[in-house]
Image (cartoon, rainbow, N blue to C red):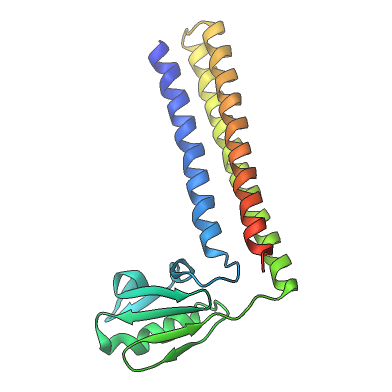
Length: 187
């Protein structure tokens, strides 16, 4: 019976951990003015008919804070990579230098920084909603355990543990948001 409670707790925790991991990935996509290879993570290239992530067909590096270099392993697809970056609408244009693509990342304006903070806050709020949904699912599972004959005290303790877990993940999200806000607003 205690194993059932532990299973519900572990499933709830896994759901919350997934929400936090997703938020971290989304935050990497929001550029804070510094060039990063992660900025191209969502770019998918039509590689001879197969849709392939850019990082599986090229070396993506950032030699300095204002530049990203994309060096494809197969030089014949440099045009397809350039086209995919352009169609991803990331706000910058790659410069084809024959063997590499050079992307100059423009400085972010103050208005754009404020928009990015709003975008980050929206992602953080989505993560909090996912955390609360995991809590609700865990509590629903706990209630169903009570109907199956688990003692009410055990179920109450499980629900209290789930609430403590929820609170700790909300604090983690707030800390991630605070760090991202600071990162975006730093010039």
